[in-house]
Length: 375
Ligand code: 13P
Ligand code: SF4
Image (tube, rainbow, N blue to C red; front, side, top):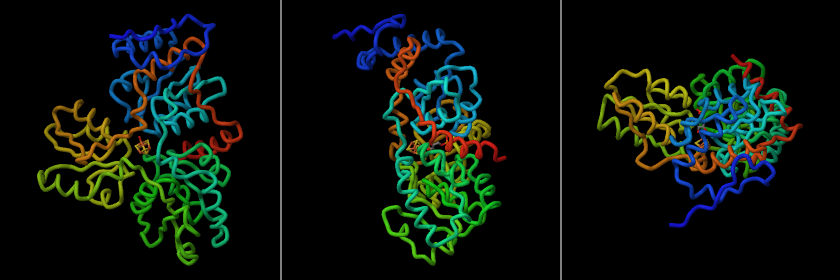
């Protein structure tokens, strides 16, 4: 069997950054031991944040776990550390960079860990849409709201235009804040979270339009724009799109007692018939607090649902879709990338630093701070 190439020791400070390739072939036990040793060595200088969708082998190393809201709060409160290694996706690391001081390095172990939903709304298309809207409605009466699953540039756009960020756990409070100030909301990039939240507030579908950035006026008539209160960007999560009303019906047919618990990124037709809807933190709390013997079917990312099933053997926890719906980009963070990025950070050759340019960060921080201040 071929031996993996030798990896320089973590005391070799003069060398260039350690290359990734040799880590790929190391046995898991060695990677785990090296990760643990580096954590001990860095002590309080290091904070590992982990999103609930991470693989078990990675999430066990997180100092703090959470949904996007909780993780952004943890980042904002992390004043003592020097390095944050973010086991999540790119927009989460960007958010942490925006919310921490300049002497904290935020590291994403694999830069390919993006979010396909965040990629559906770029700054140029959002700015074009904003000026198109201004031709037909009073733009000073529109609050731009971006889901945290978006680029820092889009957050900055919202910050500059009196808008703010929301997450799946505070979307309703953010929309209430927005409607208390202005009469319309432009919601990026997840049409489903926007629609589900607005509907729960009693806003009718006839007052919502979908803005398709590829079409003139987003595919709407000027009259429809004038009638709208909520303008939903045409974006979605490809993982949560996989859950269908038919899956709910099939589980209920087989088990009339089953409770259906879904994330608000699911389509309205699924959310409408679910028993409970909420963020990943909410999903975890709900299952943890459920009565022994109760039966649940959960519509969110596979790794989280499998972990919940494993950690709650006294309840029946099943996955809502017959397909394997996992977030392929969250999955990119693995033991080799975690060990590689940690060892480089420890020897002073940090890799994969996520750095938001100062001007963008300043405006994005305004939008994030507004969100954190919404009660
Ligand atoms: P939460 O904030 O609920 O953890 O959601 C993050 C996410 O990306 C869901 O797809
Ligand atoms: Fe993005 Fe969907 Fe993955 Fe969440 S689950 S990070 S929204 S692609």
